[in-house]
Structures are given as structure tokens and as C-alpha cells.
Length: 168
Image (cartoon, rainbow, N blue to C red; front, top):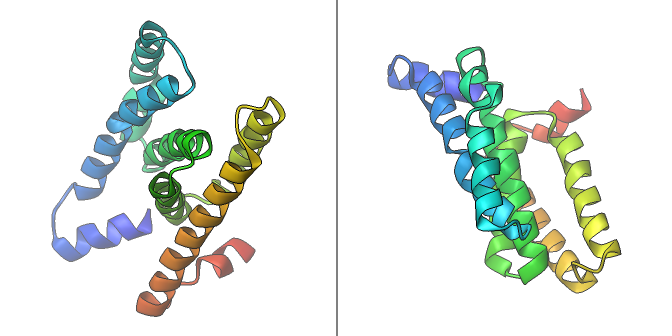
């Protein structure tokens, strides 16, 4: 959140942070619909679920209060690409998962709890034989590698250590 405020001050664009937060929160319906379809909901069910999300207070009210509502976009994106990565085994999708999760880590320390949620989702999928262990391992290794590379690049360029932030 401080990153967005810093960018807003540096660019002198008043309201940039609020605009990004509102835009990302509103755009959450796109990965949410895709997630619903990836979970094999019928199209009508996915559309209804998406409309319910779009009219919820987390989309309509929370962006006007603070900036944390934008994490809804990154969390939904992570779940969508997680399901796609472990169902389809795509290297590109696993890399997108790593990218989305790395961004999520930059904006919310609840990402550690969300990581447990993603692990449980994967475990349930494996126990029900919806996901193979090979695809789970490939998605996990690739996404973890992307997260590490992004945070290493941030550390090298800006000397910002996100792991130290989590430990404090």
C-alpha cells in the first residue's frame, strides 16, 4: 500500500492510489468468473456467482474505505491460475501464479494465510484425484521460482527485503 502512495506522490497524480484500488477491485470479477468456470461451474452458475461478487460490499464499499480491498483481485487471480496450473500443467500458468502471488505479498501480509489456503485447496484436489502430483509439483516449483526471482530482483534494485518484513 505504501508503494502506491509513494508512486502517487512521485508522479504528483492526485487520486492515483484510489483509482488503482477501485479499478483492481472492480476487475476482480474477471478472474472470479474464470475461476468459477475452471471449477466446472455451469456458465449460468458462474455468471450468477460473479454478479453476486460484483454487488457485494467487498467490491462496492471497501475500496472507498482503504486500499486493502485491491488484494481481492490478486487473491482471486492466484486461485484461478492455481486451479489452471494444477489441472492443465501449463508452465506459463504456473509462472503467472508466481507473479500474482509475488504481487500479493507486496500488498498484504495475509498472503501467508492465503498461501495455506492455496495449499489446502491443492491438497483437497489431490485427495479427490482432481490434480496429479506431477502437475502439483511442477506448478509449485515454477511459481515458487518466479516468486523468489521477483523478490530477489526487488532486493537487488531497491534493497527491500520482504522476508525481513514478515519476520518482524
